[in-house]
Length: 88
Image (spheres, rainbow, N blue to C red):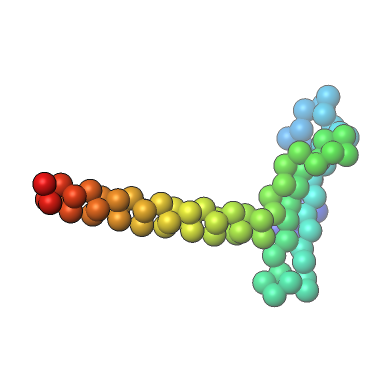
């Protein structure tokens, strides 16, 4: 589906008091290696929702990294506490 058609369908869902105030935008970065982009929503010209694929990928990567660190930390703490328990 073309963006223009999808944008029109989204705008049709907006209530009358918000028509002309809420706008939907999409940007593709063609020169990026993976051609990712972002979609965002503005109200009265101010960005209120940002759905940037690059920022999301970075956030997911960082969250996974922290989770792996915490799992390793918890596992090593459990092993340490078992060895301490066994040495009594």
